[in-house]
Length: 398
Ligand code: PMP
Image 1 (cartoon, rainbow, N blue to C red):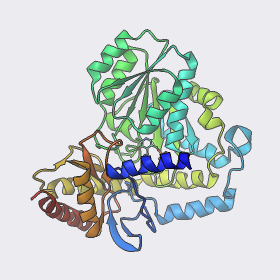
Image 2 (cartoon, rainbow, N blue to C red):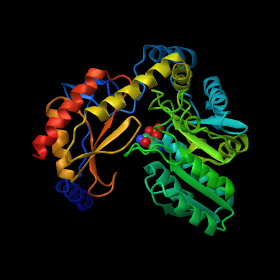
Image 3 (cartoon, helix red, strand yellow):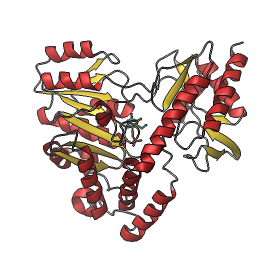
Image 4 (cartoon, helix red, strand yellow):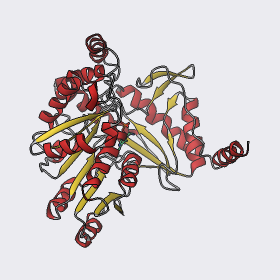
């Protein structure tokens, strides 16, 4: 009872600080028009950026994959769980990334979280404690956890501060140097200065690990992500893309020089010691890549860009601030936790689902409503949201 009492006390404290999180039950979380806890809502919170998660062709491909391969892989990759579907998908990713990474090879993972743990721990295992890992201050939790688990000497550099990073790299005498960054920052929507970071890494013989969870499928004319967007090419690059966001399915892949990928297969514990993802998912992902890189993907990216411009134009905020972002992540910074929760509750009462994001996910006093747009939204959806937002700001901050 004493142990349970400790937990209850902590939970009460979170509740008092307005930091207790609640899940809502959505009948179909990826759809913009969705029933939540029995009520119809218009949702602006999923990462289904291209609106592919319920695409009939992907639903069909998943069924086909289940018929062809069954529903489970049965074992980890190195035992007997590595199926033809996984292998074909890796080949596709290697081809897709070959313009940006020299001698590219790819490896798939069950989740992006695991891929990030795998890359950072395996890279740091090469030189053990003689590894310096430079981590951008707004990196995703999975990169932070990967850095901690790697037991490298971790140094955090300020958001977007290339000069500060240069100073740290110059001062480093470590055998292995790793710079790690999100490409699109998930709470702000802005982009990392990847060309400058890569130039630095090449100059200082450091790896550049890029987490493109929010860029793959969205950025670049062909949806290849941040490397295409910035036209980068190097053998120092280690690229991670997730497949549960724009790709609409689930999982992740890492693309890098073939030697790096072979090292991950041999040494990355989150790759080796887990059951391979169901092969049917890989089969569905092959269909998703056809959509992303084809005409339909291009049309969906154009529509998404139009919605982003429309939202920026339609929001007329006086106190709250729309964070400058050119991506589908459009955060409205409010400040106080309570005010953000009140705004989210008012939007919710009118049928709009926009999540309030609070510390510790974001820094103190920067609580925000994070709008995420999807190609599945219509111009009418976005117009309605902008109008509701403008009215609610006046109500909360007269
Ligand atoms: N990196 C970033 C930047 C993310 O936003 C996320 C997902 N929220 C992940 C990694 C983890 O990916 P996954 O959901 O596939 O585990």
